[in-house]
Image (cartoon, rainbow, N blue to C red):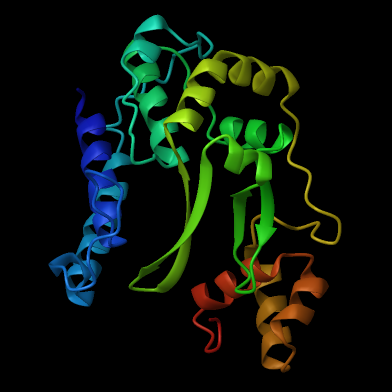
Length: 248
């Protein structure tokens, strides 16, 4: 296991503990457990951020920059897949296969490949919740395939996780080569939703100034969202980043 793989693996455990989740079985820990103490949670989040920064450092980033061979599923990848009876996050599934790709010296699987395939095949659907956050939640077909969503409580309030049981994990493993082939064959430039033409685009000084101007003029976040062509969640996140008061 390379240094970056070790750090990534350790970070996945720390992230789960920071969210009040037992990293061994994926279940929420009791409310009175030590890791649910707010000071402990903050420390875990801080460590996670430091590990994120460490992983981005070129001296330990072992992903081969000259890997030109396309991503492919090998027998070793599927045979050694760590099926988890308690359920897995989609991120953990992707991280496993990309760790294998790093070791094989081939290109990584793009992170959107799995979620786009699950959406296009009717297993997931994009949903915007009342708090302005966007989620990809299971449909009825997704539930039948072993994909479930549940709300959990962390230091920053309620958040939603989507879990893939063994049946869903096997569906992805068995379909992975087709998923990869279709993604790279049909890959298209990101197209924002109608009315959100600036979704995903960088902000820049001009848009930051416009956002600040509209905010200080007393416009609600919903109106600013329409004026700037960005999602409500994007507006709230940027207000918070700029240090404006009611960005929650």
